[in-house]
Structures are given as C-alpha cells and as structure tokens.
Image (cartoon, rainbow, N blue to C red; front, side, top):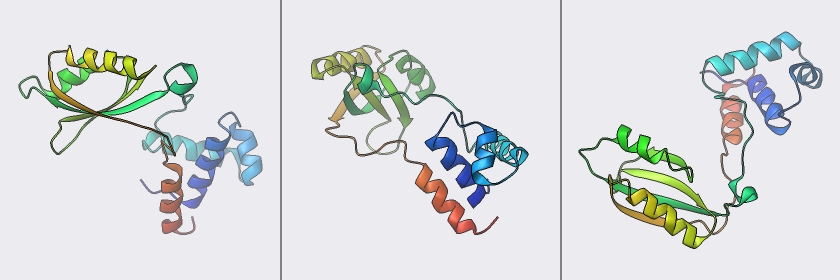
Length: 160
C-alpha cells in the first residue's frame, strides 16, 4: 500500500489525539473533511490501520512483569491448534510462529515473578509445549513503535 506524507500526517494526528474527530483533524491539517475520511477509509480497507481501539497497559492494572518466552512444541500437534490452546491463557499477550531453535515466541505478562512461574506452568500444562525458555524484561523503552516507520516510508515516497 502506498503511504504518502498526508496519510502519515493524518495517522500521526489521530495517534496523538485518538478522540480528535474527522472534522477537527481536517481543520488542523487544512484539508477537506471528506479527504481526511477518504484517507482513513483507504488506510483501513488496505490494512495499514487495523483498528481503532484503546491501547491497554497491563502494568497499570496489576501485571508489571513482562517476559518473552521461547516455546518448543510437539510437531505433530500443529501451530494452529497450539495457538488456539495458548490463546485461552489471558496472560499471553502476543504469540508468533518463529524460525530458529524455538517454534513459537510469546509475550507474557504476570503480577509477580512467582505469578510468572504459574503462567509458565499453565503453558506447559497444555501438553503441547515441550520446552520453554523465558527472558524477563527489566525495563520497557518503547513498544508498538510503528509511527516512525510510517513517517519514514511517507518521506521516501515524496510529495503527494
């Protein structure tokens, strides 16, 4: 999908102020309301914007521990079925099939280090994970950082 500077400006504005509204965005950007709406619609339909939902911070509601878990799985069970089972564990916030020594990589949140052990035990109890290895995050510097990438892509594209 082609992203230009106007697309990036619209997304940047809505990222900074999610409740701004299309009319106010058009005023601030100095473009027609219909242009803002058409651009947002195109970005949604093209999949560049996948949703407009609140971004939750688990640490703010009792889950300050973040761990990255490499999981080796039973090859006969299949990634889709294992992902379904792991999706039933609410503390798993992200799950990826990966290359390398592990088969899956999961981001896990927990209330404490002992609670992290409980979550890992729950993962192992699915019966489809053969081995896990975890790394605990000590500090988050940034996450979900896609806006700079969109802006860099738009700058490469040149003027609209």
